[in-house]
Length: 107
Image (tube, rainbow, N blue to C red):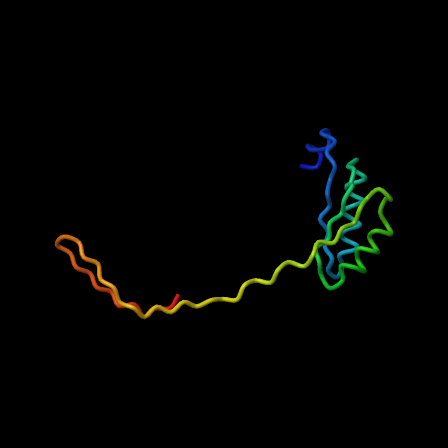
């Protein structure tokens, strides 16, 4: 397994956990598996969500005292979809070629 290949390097593991429903049990299972494999886990990171504060407290209560539990801030919302409308015409002239385009397309 990949985790066995990395183990001899003694690198610390940062666990990125889920703050949604069921996130506590899956996070704790992953945390305990890393500890059983011999990894040090100094940090558990939770993505912000509706239950992230209560989940972070529950996880904090069940990990080693040296392990920090951090909740990331809520990401910025996606920008609204913008539709561009072009309704201009232009022409392009090259030696021997004349092209005129009228644009009325949306993209």
